[in-house]
Image 1 (tube, one colour):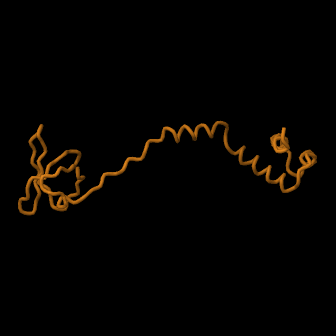
Image 2: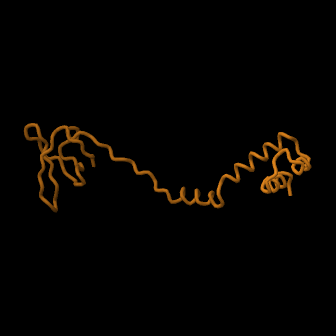
Image 3: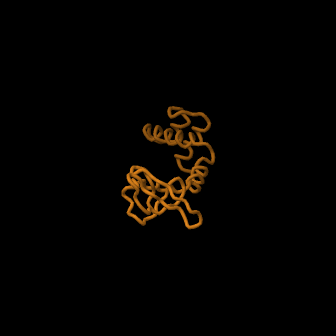
Length: 121
């Protein structure tokens, strides 16, 4: 057993760095203090904490990139975009509105303001 391990056993038993039992190990004052700090850091973690942290890192979901929102005005005619979870195709302009068509399963025209934010597809 190393002197460090022996010091840790004594620290576990409640001895301090200046205790005669710890001094009897024959290690210097600064080394005893460093061992005590290392011992304290190791004991601050609860048993199994490293394993729990590793499991959490393993099951943590990958961050999903957030969709880029753009003004519907910047989408070219004929291009597809998503709005409120539905896919539309930009079909035409009527006055200050843009018409989007949602299909082919469902025929649904919708007028959008030129400043509405959508997700290009």
